[in-house]
Image 1 (tube, rainbow, N blue to C red):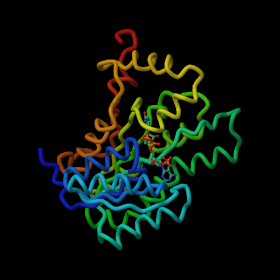
Image 2 (cartoon, rainbow, N blue to C red):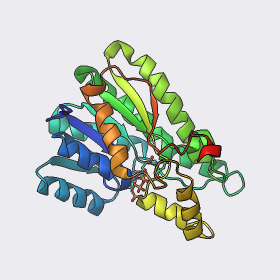
Image 3 (cartoon, rainbow, N blue to C red):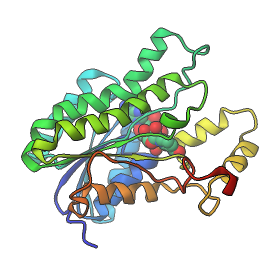
Amino acid sequence: MNLNLNNKVFIVTGGAKGIGAAISNTIAAEGGIVVIAGRNKNDNQLIIDKIVKAGGKASSVRVELARQEACKEVIDFTIDKYSRIDGLINNAGVNDGVGLESGNPEKFLESLQKNLSHYYNLTHYALPFLKTTKGNIINIGSKVAVTGQGNTSGYAASKGAINALTREWAVELLPFSIRVNAVIPAEVWTPLYENWINSLPNPKEKLAQIISKIPLEKRMTTAEEIANMVAFLLSDRSSHTTGQIIYVDGGYTHLDRSLT
Ligand code: NAP
């Protein structure tokens, strides 16, 4: 199936590592041009080198997205370089463990800046350009929005809001034929996941316990499986899909526990 992403321009936040890196690689392999917005210069360069070596096109902008002005810088960089934006993939985030007792009001707000505000800010600044291309927005959420996790109020609030904004923006952007969808991972092995599992008392046992409860094939979802869904949603092969919250999780969030 040709996804027709050739020479279209896609911004991937947190596109240098984990799920974001898989999204960057997949878009580039489909002929799209990737703009990676990430805060680590070396990580950004490593993935650009990999994409270019494989014959793809990519560039990066080094930004800390929790900083409000950074989001405008990402859009300005992309327009200066490529003069268009065909898609925005809001992906960067961190499960930062700001709980009711472990956190405080300042840390809660900071967590929203790390996980939520840049989704809005980037979409706001990208909108004029997305209108021109009838572009596309994908928000990466988390199953934590609907299951909770404990000790992570800022992250859970952000991911819940991301689901709500996916529907809200899908409605607001109907007149412009801009589609907005969310892709929801549950258990994907990435640097973020590794840090999180290692923060728990018995990481190995906990991981085995989680994996044993993933209904489809008792294994974690790969970052590439998330990326494949994102690429499909970005493409005109999904031209009548909008406002959807799609779980790519081997059935982890929803299937009947008594059967799994
Ligand atoms: P990851 O391995 O930590 O990769 C995220 C990338 O984004 C890293 O390069 C990170 O930089 C960068 N980043 C994060 N916050 C940033 C910021 N404020 N400014 C600039 N760059 C930033 O994370 P992941 O596991 O791939 O997660 C990607 C998305 O999937 C997140 O939204 C996460 O909530 C969601 N998710 C993941 C899982 C899972 O199982 N992995 C499950 C549910 C949801 P640093 O390396 O400097 O931190």
